[in-house]
Length: 445
Image (cartoon, rainbow, N blue to C red; front, side, top):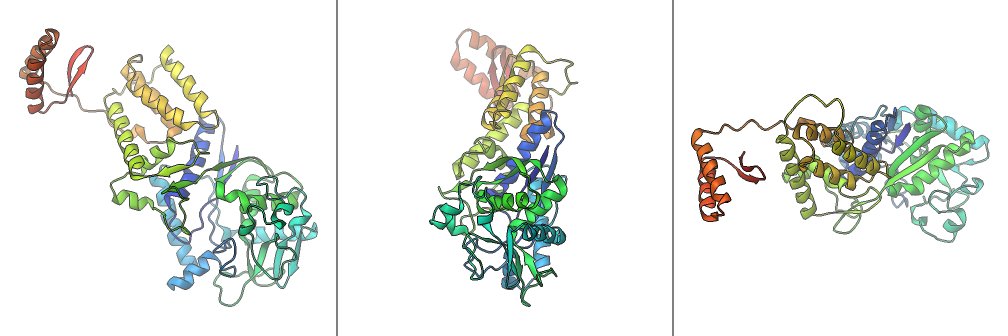
């Protein structure tokens, strides 16, 4: 299975809303591999060509160039710094590394070649050193997002995301190549003069190079449906004549204060911010598991704290389970739970059900403890919560004195002498034990 996931624009730190997209793709990959597929995952690095605002309010300034001008650093230095930080964040979220991590700046020639094909096919035109895609010439435009040429010209949904430029033939057309002036650090030679690529063309070029003219799945945040992914289809299909992607998978927004988490709103949270608050990256991953990827998730202090507690409890349950050799076959109850887990992950990645089944597996008395541990770790191949790193709890050494108190307490409970039972429990606590009441009697941990 070939998967292309739109990666970050590395002009600033990625925020936890961005990480929801990369984590969703990670789960998709894990689900496919769990089902026995070989996966080839490509996630790009956008280090040139992404305009600072989709509506061009800054005159088409590249995000990397804008950050370079504001900070006095080079655009290449900025890209390298934030790429390193993004990769570290992904590692801390236990997001498996993609098989290919191409950078836009390394694929300028591939973008030029696709642009030349689009001009040859009558789908693009040159204007004052810029090259624009003639949207009206691509008959299927709008099939993904609903933003057809007619709707866009009528001022429909998505129009505000269209680029503004005086040299375009039509307002809905978008840039494939832009003329670069002497103030830019990132410029390349092209048949149309010195300049730089548009944002959308980079993904068409890199997806085609590494996954072919047709591949299985394209993923990204729902905000990329238009214009980015709609424009990708127009470019790739316009150049090859083939439908490039079989399935599109888009995750919903992470909301903060009931509004989309974004830099324009000014409500972004970084993974480092969560760590400063004592929240583990794995707790954020756990939180994302509790909502379906196509549902909005409102991030609150209560929700992330509950996720941290839920993860801690799951780890505590696993620590109680002994480490043994994997069973040759699953018991009937374990197999039933595995089938329920499979059904959940294969039902459009219903991970909230999958994590619920995992929590149930950790505590059920219908499966022997040793087998439960193997079952949970089998599920974690998909969940990715690093539960295999949870060490089993060291055996509790119980003195003869403590054992005698346990015997007396069990006798008191059998006689329904709750006052004496509580007194003995308090004595055991003073000795450093946690006291649990089980069907088999008092248990010390």
